[in-house]
Amino acid sequence: QEVVPILDMSTNQLFFDNYPNTQLSHQIQVRPFGVERTTHMRSLNPEDIDQLVTVAGMVIRTSNPIPEMREAFFRCVVCQFTQTVEIDRGRITEPTLCRNCSTNYSMQLIHNRSHFSDRQVIKLQEAPD
Image (cartoon, rainbow, N blue to C red; front, side):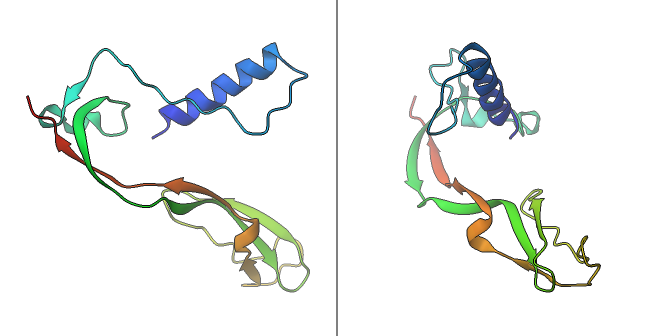
């Protein structure tokens, strides 16, 4: 879950270290492919959870991309103070107290200022031998 984002960050950092005056319209995203060692679906174990593995199989169904909130943007309805909150495992820790005016339960979620990423569910079937 964290391997690919770390690869993304490292690659972007290396790129901008080598080319400091370059402007990109988007961040570099790493997508590994052509890995020599693949695993059959039957060989997956609990130890493989949160690990980057290559699975041999056939895609039988895909969902449409589903927007998933990564960072929530809140604004106080009293003083207009803004605050961002990172999403942890799909849970939003909504601020209950405004840090500027100390009003309880005055923070309102602003969807169009929040950051989202796309998530997609892919159903795999074991590859025929």
